[in-house]
Length: 100
Image (cartoon, rainbow, N blue to C red):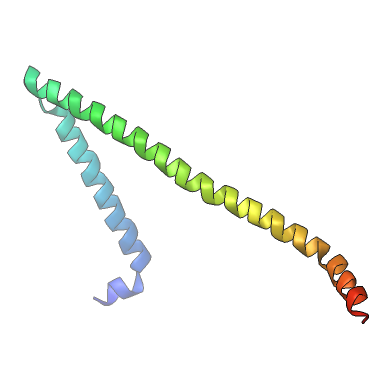
């Protein structure tokens, strides 16, 4: 048990390597399997088409959700920068009006 405390990064790297090797082995095994009947392949194509449509919709939604805050933050930053730039002028005008 002490070895794990002394070598946590090595343990994590070995565990990651084992997981990657298992994933590659599983993918190779799966790709060697038969494609299935014509009906199964037809269903698989329909599922792929639906998944592609779903991912397109998700990408569009995520893009819109990401762009709106980006633009709003840019506008806010511009307004804030302009206000900070004009602050001395506004302060001087207030002093003139108040006679300070």
